[in-house]
Amino acid sequence: YKVAQNDLRSATQGLEAAKFVVNSSNATVRESAENVRRTTVYAPMKGIVSKLNVKKGERVVGTAQMTGTEMLRIADLNKMEVRVNVNENDIVRVHLNDTVLIDVDSYASTEKQFKGIVTNIANTARDKTSADAITEFEVRILILRSSYEDLIKQGNRFPFRPGMTASVEIITTKKDNVLSVPLTAVTTRNTEKDKKAEGGPPKDDDDEKPQVSDNKAKVEKKEDKVVVFVNDKGVAKMVEVKTGISDYDNIEIVSGIADSVEVVTGPFLVVSKRLKNGDKIVQAAKKEEKKDDKK
Image (cartoon, rainbow, N blue to C red; front, side, top):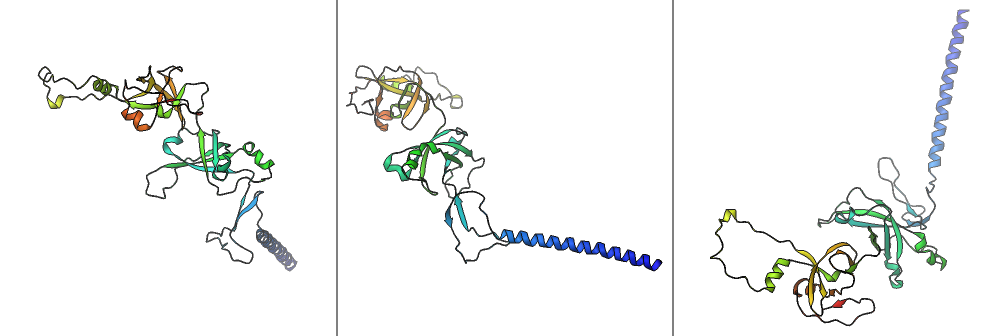
């Protein structure tokens, strides 16, 4: 009887051991099946192969100890974005969903401008690859399909290609119905110095001035004022103004002049340095696009 019980226990243990062997074999089968499945690579997204680095029959690195080989790239040409670098002085004014005007070099001859929105703003500055001490942040801009729908209707299924060059203008602030003047009309001047220059050289009153020791002498420095020159019956009159937002061509005038006055524009050196309060001016011939008076 005892021998029979020992045989039963031995047989039971043998059965349990056989079950573990079966489970281990099943795990090996599943692992092998997974390895076989991984030999076929499926694209994680729909798109078009934009770059093919490896051809059929070539060897690639695919071990866990080394970086794998980039075989190809897939791009969704229906959703193209522009990546630009923005200086640290301007990045604080850029926000998500800001409207962007995009100029693509490939369409420069048509003067067509596209629209987009800011979708991503980098939190960390780009690594500096040159000796220039410039800190820039990457901003990603999605090109709106509605802005190039006409090109698709003309038969150009994919108007943009990866690697194209583009320049953008990010609209951070927008105002309607405001007074603005050309940037060339606005300059900075030290009004105190200009007044002294108009009145001639200062008189020699050193005998009447009290003597002050060098260690107590204070030099008062007047800050430059933002001014424009207006046409006052053929004479340039300097007027201090307060400015607001600006673009590449015009700048907002918050206060200082009315919308009925004529401002003087001209080359930077003339307006910023040579033009004086009281100088005579003549009205230049008006152009179709720019109707501002020039000196």
